[in-house]
Image 1 (cartoon, rainbow, N blue to C red):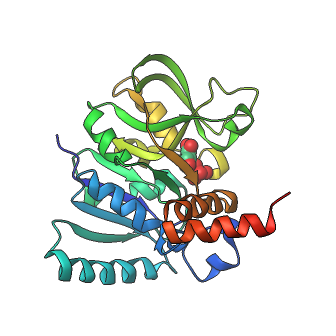
Image 2 (cartoon, rainbow, N blue to C red):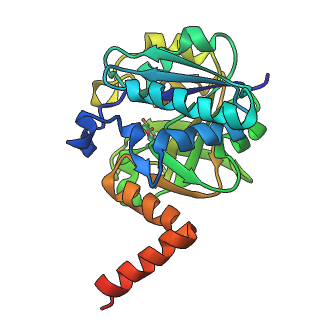
Length: 273
Ligand code: G1P
């Protein structure tokens, strides 16, 4: 079945970016002139997604306003876009799994994508689009190798076998300790999921951090549905952290002729020794 819908969980508090995120959603933080959520939208659109479902929360209305304006501009230039937008509220932030569950009535009974805007992936090909091409019915998560000391920040796969860019997982563990992690292969915020996951999520008990963890649902579904890691191409910036957002901004500035000249001048004047 074709993957037409993508869920964007945008209900998190963004406390690492306080004080700015007291007034601005984390997903509206900018990489130069476009907010993170815009890049996530572009990646999904390029990947063939037609329905964009935002799981939002109090204080996040600027995301809706942003897309109204952006779509109006898009329509003037290109005609009506072949996509639709809808928003559903997550009343309390109870974890990624809970955010996904909030979109159940909009996704219904078809496989769907999940795109977390704070994981910014820079590549000429759409990461989520490549995942859709490789989706065969098993749940799929984008994965990358991380330094072993960082495994506690991620969902970590226990690998059964690898076939090209696909890693078949025999297990997955949310934020394991450095001692307990079964590999260094970490999930980043892109998923293609079977709708069966909703029935699993609604019965899940809170896991790590007292939250409903998507990883726990993926683990439970392995015997029936399977779990594939997708080793994506491109550079990923963890824009949930200041260091990652700064690196993404510098990377994009360096790609721009005028801005890269500004960067060079800055480095020369301030960082020569
Ligand atoms: C979430 C997931 C985790 C994944 C990570 C990727 O964690 O629960 O499995 O590895 O995103 O960014 P969070 O960063 O929301 O704590």
